Image (cartoon, rainbow, N blue to C red):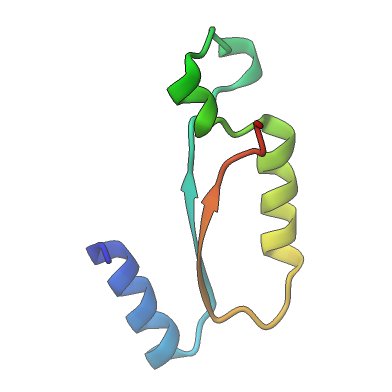
Length: 75
C-alpha cells in the first residue's frame, strides 16, 4: 500500500470521512487521442467510462474507503 493510500485509510477510519482512490489507467483526452498499442489498450480508459465512474463514485452511498482500478472493458 502506498503512502497516499495509507494516509487515506488513516483519515477515513480515524476522522470519519469517506475516501475513494482511483487508479486511472491509460486515459487520453479525446482531442489528444493517439494510436495505442496492445499494452496501452489493456489499460485504456474511455472518456465515457471515466465520466460514468466519477458520477457513480459521487452518487454511491455508504462507502468508507475504496481503491478502484479505472480501465475500460477493451476485450
